[in-house]
Image (cartoon, rainbow, N blue to C red; front, top):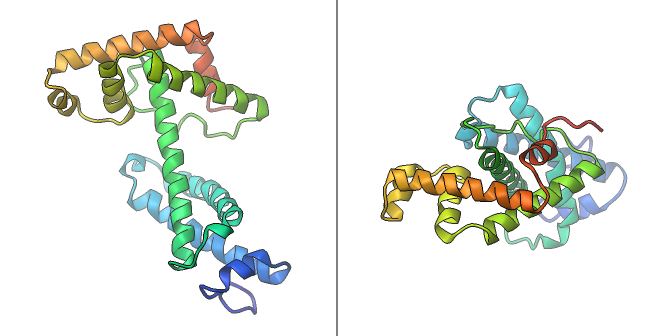
Length: 222
């Protein structure tokens, strides 16, 4: 609610969020509540990959990402041109942020699996659940940069395609085999060879599998 103030109209949102005092506080509270509901619904109804998560876990994720989304909205108010409702624009900012975070976590998890040849089918969001300190954040950024460089530079084209589609994007092996005009056994071999090459290339860059796992550990020691 906006206390005694009226709910912002489409034209009032930006001035309200740029104002000070009770008017801005009320607009922020209204925006945060709207985005929290929107993000929670998105996680519960449109992300089948999170189906195993308890409501309280999804609620916590929604609250964390809503806070980030509010900051992004405030930082990008100049980007709102009035072509749509303000809440529609803010919703897109929030959902793009959430989708990007989920995609980043999936790629991070898949990269760990590729480097360690783990048989675990899905680490889901079990890494990076705790916000790291500055030193841990720097290490993660360095590791992630090395992983991206290895995928781009050290794999063959077919290894890169297969690793990306099968391991990172979860595309069924049969579908990848058909698209590459090959068979399951060849896909398995390509994945195995890509993982092996990734490990060797990462080690050549100074990152062992244990280093990578430590960098993306779910718990921060700081």
